[in-house]
Structures are given as structure tokens and as C-alpha cells.
Length: 262
Image 1 (cartoon, rainbow, N blue to C red):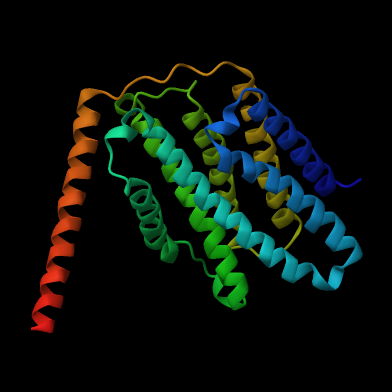
Image 2 (image 1 turned 90 degrees about the horizontal axis):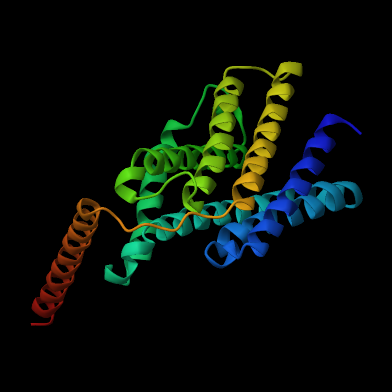
């Protein structure tokens, strides 16, 4: 058994342990998308990396692209879910469209990051290859930024290292940082032994993140604290401003339609 297969199996076995802890601790009720994402990662490895690659090699690429698309949708959902969970102490006071606003902000951040994740070697890829690289590294940067925001604002957000949101973000951030560093190296490097060793380093970092989640979810979660008064005021003010802007835009559109009918 070569190292690639060993790392793949180690990742799937550790992922299964994490899923077992999420279910056993009841964490899956708070993070259903994250839990489903981990289950999906196991199933996709079994179906794509083993079954399709072995028995239907001609269909591997098409199935891989479909699986990658589902994977990116899950990643987006995980970021939205984590953001919404962080706001748990204040959700009752937020408008109903706040969840949609969070998703829009993440997409906007991705649009800013998208043109930055490029390199001299990417331009030679096919359209599908360039799209794949851009999506992978854009989400890597978003996960790193998400972790930095949570860690840097932990005092204002009233979360610590025993809170599930920061634990999940830490695992994602570590794996994403290694992935981003390897991609930066790849963008200026041709294929070779060292190239593949760096890819294996990414797989090792993912297994390390899973091991961190095993330790984290095996311990009892800290009781979630309320936001600081400063943070509550800031979030409510932002929600109020966004609500006023939305109403103003709606009124403006209504006035234009009314004048158009007249």
C-alpha cells in the first residue's frame, strides 16, 4: 500500500471517528451542514477514488467534476452555518434576511479573492482546470480569513477555544493554510518528486485537522456566553442600517414603477 492510499484511508477513518463524535455529542444538531460535509467526504472518496477510478476509469473525470462541485457547495454552506452559529446569542434580534446577508457577504468576499489566486502556471491550464484551481484556493483563503476573524475577534464575539465554532474554524484554517502555501509553491514549480511530496503534505495537514477535531469534540463544549454590549450594539446597528438601506431601495423602485405607469 503506497503513501497516497494510506493517507486517504487514514483521512476517511479519522473522519468517521469525527462524525461519530458529532453524533454522540449531539453537535450535528447545531452543525448539520458541517456534519453532512464530513459524511459526504467519506462517500465521495469511496465512490470516486475507489469505485469509479477502478471500475469506470473512462468516467472518472466527469464524476470527479460533479463531486468537486458538490464539495464546493458544501464548503460555502459550512461557512454560512458557522457564521450563523457565531451569531447565536443575538439571532432573535436580527432580521429574517440576516442569513441571506451572510451568504451574500461570503460570495462578495470570494469575488474579491478570486482574481488574486492566480499564478504563472495557471494560465496554461484548461478552462476547467483554471476554474478548479480558482475555486479551491478562493475557498482556502476564505477559510483562513474566517479563522482569523473569529480568533482575532474572540473577545468581542465571546467565544474561546472550547467553543465549537472556533474549533471547527481552527481545523479548517490550518488545513487551508497548508493548502494555500503548497499551491503558491506549485504555481512556480514544474511537476516532479517534490511537487507530489507537497501534495502529500496537504493530505497530512488534513489528517492533522481531523485529529484535532477528534480531541476537541471528545471534550465537553464550553457554555456559550452572551456577546459583549459593544458587539451587540455594533451588530444591531449594522442590521438597522442594512434594513434602512433595503427599505430605501424598495421605496425608490416603487416610485420609479409608479412614475412609469403614470
